[in-house]
Length: 210
Image (cartoon, rainbow, N blue to C red):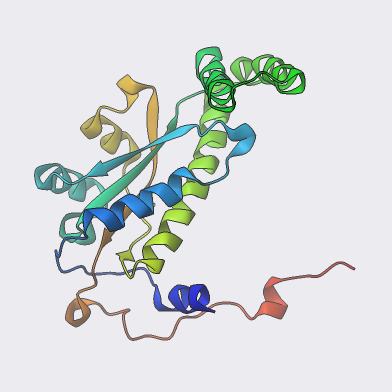
């Protein structure tokens, strides 16, 4: 029940107080994101942890001027691969073989299947697929933050092209997918903090097929 209690506690904070989140908590939140499952285990994204206040100030105007961008402790930017390439796919398969200490024929056949598929697809289609994988890690970071009693604010309202330019993401073969400010709520300035969490009832959301 503890996890559900934490998830009921969390909400999308609309105002943060600038208090710093301890680095050990940030590390655990990032580790939860790192451990997230992804399609074929490729982890086609990177996470940028923006602590620099000047950069946060630069991002705020292109993120609907949301105060949490500058008042948060750490701003996480989830940036997905701009496309899948042979080098990127091979890197993850080689890393798997190195860590596990052996090669598996079925795994190598799967590598060849992916190499014959993803690199030939349209870059925009590949980016959209990679961004979906980033969202899985993004979701785990939100849950981990709640577990650490750290507030977060999931943000899709931003100019991705502008954020890409500010952080130099395109030069790295990346594109911003979603932002996650982490910090602590400023209750006296947050209109949402005391409102009841509203979600669909289970019967309306879930259909069980026997």
